[in-house]
Amino acid sequence: MVTVQQNISILKQRLLDRNEQLKQANNSSQQYADQLNQLNNQINQLKDQINQDNSNLQNQAASYQNQLNALNQQKADVTNQLNQANQDKANMAQQVSDLNSKLVAAQQKTDELSQAVTDAQQTKDLSDDAVNATK
Image 1: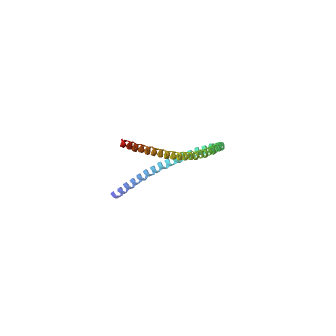
Image 2: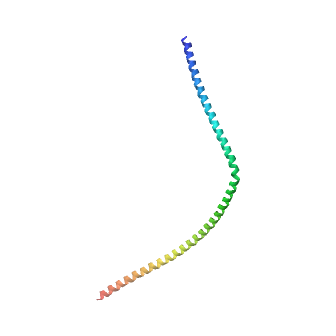
Image 3: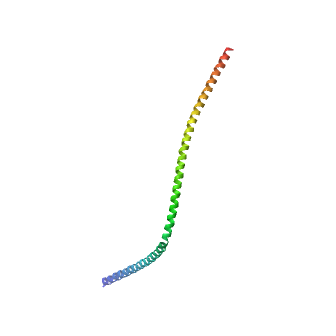
């Protein structure tokens, strides 16, 4: 008799557990249904937005094409300016190279003159020494 009551108790507990699981499943099912309704509403809103946007696309496309044409013209202008700047840069580089060559030559002359001054000073010093030695 005790075993029958224990079995009944176990079965009642299982039934309660199953009922709780069923309640949770029903709650989950309701949540999923709510989410599905929300998603359907969002989909419908997006469809409406798409339909509304499509009515403006041709005008926007023409506007974008005009902007693209203007940008392409600007690009061509900038490319021409860049080419001119590169040509100017090459000319300036050549001028800098020429000036550097002149600077090297001038520095060489300066060094030669400096050496000549040093030699003249040494000659003068030797001459002064010779004059002083004869006194």
